[in-house]
Image 1: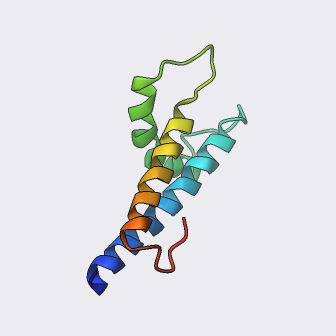
Image 2 (image 1 turned 135 degrees about the vertical axis):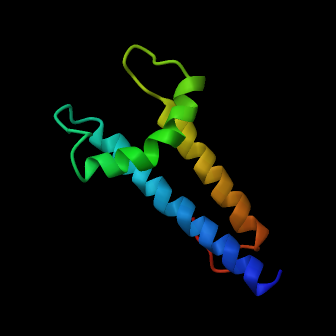
Length: 95
């Protein structure tokens, strides 16, 4: 695999890793009811993660106030990162 393709894949894996952590932070902050999602820095986090999470919220209905859509969203990120990492043979990439 050429260096430019490996660099692109490595960049995508890095992006997925950062996005994974953003979703984890979003989920953990959702446990605190007094977080104002319209105030900074929470609104930026919400604007970055909600479009992706809303894809899964439209598929999985809320189960009595418990939102399990982040679980599916995180699993898909992990799967995509694993596929991308295997494309370059795991050449120093960790996800």
